[in-house]
Length: 412
Image 1 (cartoon, rainbow, N blue to C red):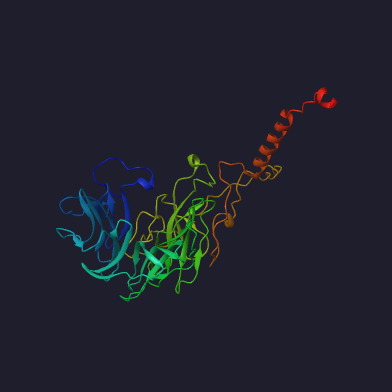
Image 2: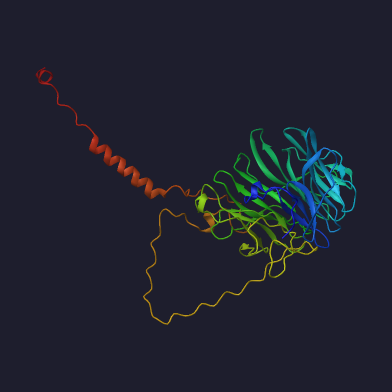
């Protein structure tokens, strides 16, 4: 268990957490934030990042294998700033023109972004504390939304917003080569005019493999996805079990292992929100099914290098992710009394089909978007038909017969 700065208790909801770990560095170092302050841990002991006057909230986003860390700070009546820090220094080094630094590689290159105005983001790369370049964009991309990672070869990933024929907007993943003048390349696929679909790359490994998340916001479902050079197709990975939301939030530098989180859509379930299982850390080894990380139900980070008995909470400085050693199942005694097998339960029309095709796009190289799924709070087409028949029957019973015409009218 890592120490925390003094303050109120932590929220059980991941989306409102003020303490989290973002990555691991050398010699048992981990980085992140505690009580919404930038911190790092040496073993279990928490250490504050020294803050400039007027700045309080912030966080460390990444650390390289030499212990150099980067992040962001905010202050009252002060603009947000990006920073770099090395343990032992008396102060952070502010990155010129930056509002957030999101990653640093082992050669000291840093990536992040700033706002040129309230609606437009500019991606930036620094070497040390010197601006190396503003990330160039192709004409159809109106601007990046977020810069998320850089590998040791200098390739950078992020996401942005594009427009086609001046009216068909879309969100797309982006990758930049190490060349200073090279514009971003769009990660396939993208869907002009489809504002529900979005691809969110999160990190890139040393072989150029990119891990991220595909989200279909119309029914709030998502899947972990992976791109490989030349980035002309995407591999969509089936979610854990019946869970309808899955993410990939990081990737190991060399092993191809991606980690993320499994949860459930509030629209399609398969569980009502009040009975849904808790968030589950997940791991995908580059092939096969998504696996649970048994020691953690919180968000995972691929920079972890778990021991055979620990997953998602401890690691080594190697920044590698590995599959946990499976725990042998407990033996179940055989029955000695013969019993009649129970009849198989009839399928319920109210339970959505849990097949992978209903959980979102699946299969290597698939570009299909997830099929709509019956919300958990509906009982399906059968119930809808039952309600319609009941309304029709009621209408027939209550329908008035036409009044007979008056005799005077018949005489006419």
